[in-house]
Image (cartoon, rainbow, N blue to C red; front, side):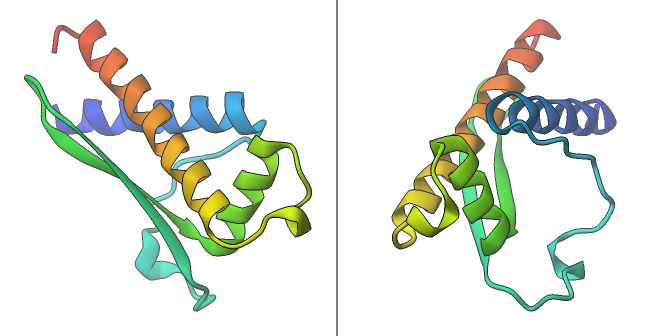
Length: 110
């Protein structure tokens, strides 16, 4: 069951980033502790409950989060003011990933 959910989450992330941000992403075994850049990170989380309950965390470098915000909002990176826009976009991306996940779980009878 864990492997199936892991695969489903990977598909959801790939679909959301491809559709909403026109970005091709791939799964990686490397977690946030393997980032050698020392750069600040942005974290978003969305919980869900039902037959399956959990929390999805979206964790990325600040520069990648800004790139996502720029893409989603259709504005150049230098027009993004402060962290609020970036945080809002990353929260919305997490919401979309969880929405797709919930739909996928429902399709599997959960």
